[in-house]
Length: 298
Ligand code: KPL
Image 1 (cartoon, rainbow, N blue to C red):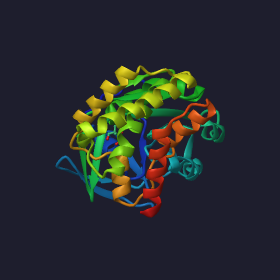
Image 2 (image 1 turned 120 degrees about the horizontal axis):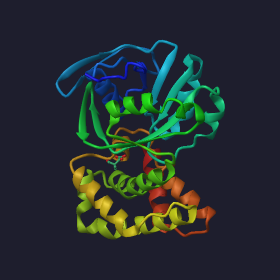
Image 3 (image 1 turned 60 degrees about the vertical axis):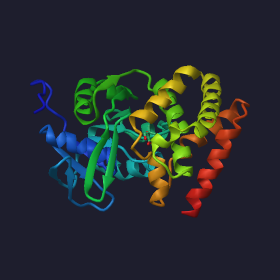
């Protein structure tokens, strides 16, 4: 059971959506004895099975004190818009998704006492029907994005440690987002286009492609002011491929289920930034077009 400091009561958390990472976080809150509810597009309660535990989640009711928003990058603006009227005056909002965060608009729609955060995570989760599995032990990096968030450091960090920990707190999330972006750019499009699990990418035929994707990303990251070490990134990607060999990437799953992918926020972001700095990224450009084609066909 989680221990909360007597001076700082646990925030009551709401998790948005019913994606795999969100349900992983909600389940871990519940199993640790924390109050947690779900905010779904169609308000409803939800029953799931998580690692042999049958869990029941109530539908969220306003005012919402603390909200984890682990929805796809393209779904964030609409999700926040829908949440705004239900937020407590000092609510804390934690965004978490693949790709680069576009937070200016969200920051300006919050009141001064409402905190905004970003969390990037390497946990893996898989949802099959009503069953959720924790498929990859990971860790998370968490960053406050405004002054109201900085006033709640301890409470939010404690909670995220329960939900998606271990958590490292940072004042600047951008280097971490570039690092995760490079990993996603190397793995997600290739697994989506070849309809394979992450482990397949260890095969020799993919090595020149992975190397070129990363070489292009490293050039763009450097120009953007967030340099990444090419050799280190190559090693990291091989590690992720090994550690998540049996998993299917989020983009492979999106294509397999005819859902929109996060290609715009991952490879699309790299291609846009490359154009800004006049850098040629032919392989990332080709992968972007191929995934967009596949997505539109689905
Ligand atoms: O983050 C991921 C994803 O699937 O989106 C990786 C790291 C590629 C793990 O599958």
